[in-house]
View 1 (cartoon, rainbow, N blue to C red):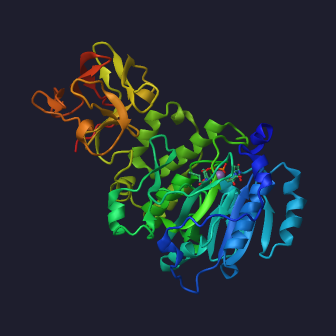
View 2 (view 1 turned 120 degrees about the vertical axis):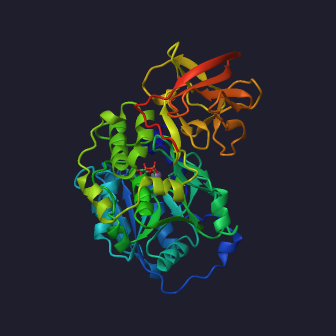
View 3 (view 1 turned 45 degrees about the vertical axis):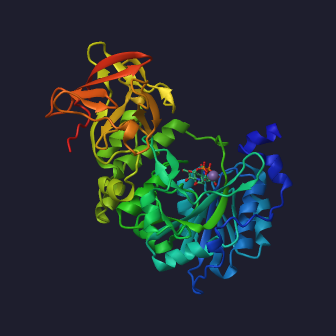
Length: 484
Ligand code: LR7
Ligand code: MN
């Protein structure tokens, strides 16, 4: 079992013991089960790209689509082989799918292209009015398709994702995903799930069966109107192998006038893996950094600095030519990233308004505030300034947090240690007040500044490792220092 696990980074032996058409629990909210949808929904092509996928997971994906979609709504399934090296994915696959009751086409990339260009190929040869993308190790559950298509029929500029349930990489157990989380991202531009904020619950008047507007999509599972996919510029074909395209399309949808939603009545399972089984020709870091730079350069305006400052070295990666993508942004007259942060993602880890972004340096000792291993619930540390960003980058935000990514400086006890805790947006223990005269306070901890005009220079006093220290702090002026 352990040997086989390495092949795909999931329990292949378990997968092989489970039927290709196994039953799944109906995990939908009660209110979803008897919703009615219009008869004349648009038909979809389902596009599945794969590189060296296991037979059983790939075919279980295909069977679950065929078995749980009304065939009147299913134009075809398109399997795009991204230059796999496994024999069974060649003729054996073509012979197998020929006898299925829904048209299944297999197309091959001539060379390893990555999931982005493979999806572009699949989309270009498909014919349905809607294109639905799925990863190659998914399972669709009862009623997954109708609510997605119905939402697109209502508004063709709405791009929709199902709730992504978890198929255990270890046991293949099926576990319902939550309708209380939505998509975000951190300073490193990693996609992350975060709790659906109260404002979005309020907008839906508490009805959890209504779609959730989500700042980003995970990337692998979504439906989009074919013409709208064209209109907003499909994908950035300059992105290689894996990564970045999910945030890129998310920012683009929102900034260019579309809507991105999680349709909570639609559930599709996905095998979540802890490691990648396949190679990244050219180097994993290089490729992901390149893709992320392309999305940051085209869509994030000055907010790209949060990414650049926390990921030392990323600015050395060549991101190629982006002129066609900036021209697209121009042509579609897309809104700035600040609009997106303000209107779509106000709870973002990247603050919309902030005073400063940089290191917190004691100018006398040349030591810097350091969040150690970027771990939650750790005391903040003090180390020699290394000037390499990473653990020594903080932003003083308009909400008066001192945050690094999703962690905030937090003092819960008077004179207690300063900890790194998940930012909670509730102010309280994470509110760092400044007082232009002498000192503002954070639970009686002084936080003052000597130059009320520029706010680049201030004193912070706090207790770290049981020692009380006063810090003469500068946020370096070569980083953006914004006054509000
Ligand atoms: O070179 C490649 N060529 C491919 O065809 C690399 C991958 N692929 C295929 C692969 O076989 C699979 O079918 O592309 C698909 C996605 O690759 P995964 O399953 O290794 O990716 P993932 O599930 O780890 O990653 C998520 O983020 C990716 C960023 O590029 C893509 O958007 C994936 O589709 C996406 N998966 C999901 O959204 C499922 C939910 C995961 C979460 C959160
Ligand atoms: Mn996947």
